[in-house]
Image (cartoon, rainbow, N blue to C red; front, side, top):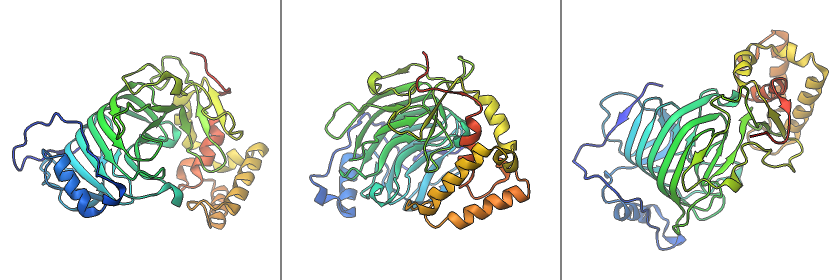
Length: 362
């Protein structure tokens, strides 16, 4: 996506130094009208507009008019700058950061919904590297001032989050993340960066939860975690994280995050660059010629047939047909459409590019 530059200069604004995002007096006050009053009182230096995040739209161009009463998730691309923005999220991710060298300042997000108990979650700020399910890399993000007000329930909007892909030189500071979700700062695949001065609604320093790089997402039958990358100097190998939100005891980047998850797999000395170069050119026929791979795919299909997870429920026949079509037409993994099949194939292929392990050496 082309870069964009949003600066709200309709009227000259003094530079804000406040990182406070005050709370409504009670959960009963969380109506649309009262939230609007709360925002106006809590952030007097912000421009008077909001973004209702419901649909996804990429915004490009040099001369962008003030965004008023939009119904879009805000998508930030490469070399982009977003400042002094208030997003009213309503059931979709509020902000998606998808490009290198982005700069964000003074972002405020409000959300009152409950999602996780309904079979999914919504993120206030999601970092999405290109080719995220095969270890794509997002570089050089700078955020100064990121505030979220959400429901106090545990299934509320999540804070700063990334599930897949490698994150390099991610620098985030200053914010109040006031919502019930346990995932206030949670990253898979954060290799390097600085996390500082984020607090909860009570002013307590928030710990960042850090897990390894994940390949293939979680198609339903377990995760494939990369605990170390070959060579050692690779940019996606875990390096030092600085700042007050880094808690060493919650740094799980070099170990299996959940040893009790028996279906999860850890890989050490993973040849990430080689894997990314090769993975999309392998054919489905070639992959499933291996009896072990065919058995694993059959097991996964049985899970798809019986699962109640909304994203897979009722998908068994269409996925089975897609596999047959891919084999008959000798499709490569990269040629498969639909998005449901590729993650499980990525996981199978990844296991041939690393060594099984449960913990990586420093």
